[in-house]
Amino acid sequence: MTRLVVQVLLNGVGLLLAANLVPGIHYAGGLLQLFLAGLVIGLINLIVRPIVTLLSLPLIVVTLGLFFLLINGLMLTLAASLVPGLSVDGCLPAILGGVVLGLFNWLVRGIVDEG
Figure 1 (tube, rainbow, N blue to C red):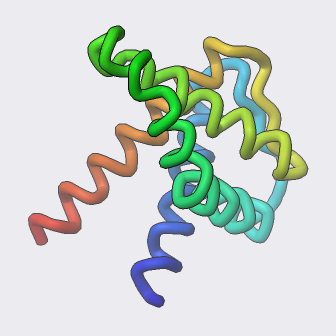
Figure 2: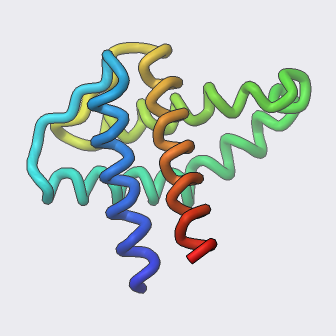
Figure 3: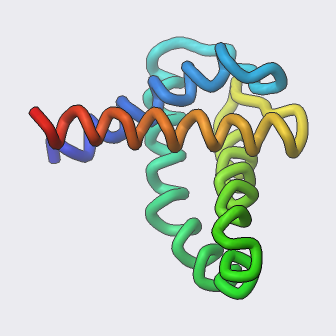
């Protein structure tokens, strides 16, 4: 249970980081909305992303994995459509925001697993 709460909080922090770094991603809200956004992103990554990845497997293989960038952007766009106060202004900001979220989560997991 603790790991789930930490992951939701990290998703929220990563989203806030993406909103501050990537032009075209806008977040307006408080900590409760940030927590909700992290929860929505976590649920999307848990439920929707595996299905989309499986269905996109031929494109992922042909593009040598670069199609994952588009999948990350689509997941962020889906989250923006579900979370009030979060907006994504197009495909490129969505892809870059997905990259920021992915790198942030990868970096945090690397630090936590080391420690």
